[in-house]
Length: 231
Image 1 (tube, rainbow, N blue to C red):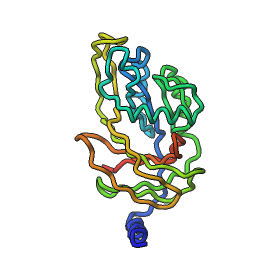
Image 2: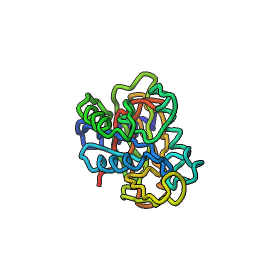
Image 3: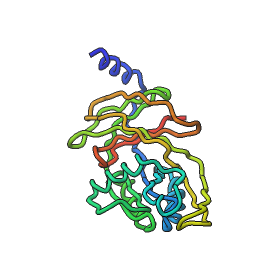
């Protein structure tokens, strides 16, 4: 009860405003050892420049056996992609894959299709929960209609720099692969059931990373809201 009361007071202390329309979350699943991923990487880098779009690059490790170990890949990124594969009833994970707002997907090489999905998502209905940050150690998620089975709150930290990786072996030997908004950390903070909740943010593993918090239907479901600290 004491924690709930403190949380309610914290919310009251925040300036009231209607929940802003969240950005369209574009997740690219890619690999430096994937021969067809370079164009998708470059296109998503361009999408990252568009207002109202949050583009995130997740590098996966399941092509490492082809001869080049992806320098950004982590097993948890491939696990996140597998949750989408199950939710979207796909046969298997693949690269380059783009998932838009956790609800629609397309091959990253089909740039026109990706653009259409982003445009449709930007026009779609949204009723996101408020997401407020208290410094760099706590985030508050407000109330909204929760999906069936409840939702989840995810912390993602990414490197906003443009980065080019020179591949020395494997299918892309001799090529330089562009990257933008490379995800370095993904952490499930906890469940969300439509009522106000507070979550602690762990310290970042490295300097220079940006923070985003996603509220999402469980097990690879639709993204309900996205928030980043101001400033």
